[in-house]
Image (cartoon, rainbow, N blue to C red; front, side, top):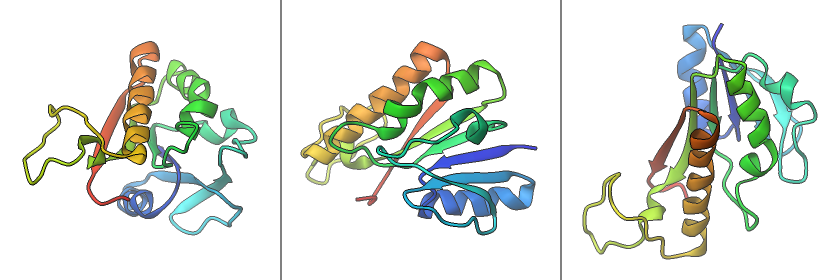
Length: 159
């Protein structure tokens, strides 16, 4: 069985979970406070910078796709800061086919109506945009250093 684990099971992760569950995927995720899982989620874990996964190996066991939608804070990306080694170890054991990081088009800054695409220079205008640039770099470093298959998605309007 394929398994999606989402750090930050919010709106976007729930939409993905609703699409994957009917296709036989097991769905697991995190929230900042304890809550019972509701379909299609089979397992819900508490996660925040001050509350790491209590047993990361068990929580991530069997994960074939991982989605990160937790925003960076003033210290960086909490998922990378706390669980990068766990994700790298999961990848080393095999089976991790995909990691998605939900970022923002805010990394491009203000272009006064000009077009941007994935090859455009990153030039955030604010602190939150710079946090996203730094978080993207940290996720891509996980790919470069450990071969974790990371894909960055820059969504419009997530702030």
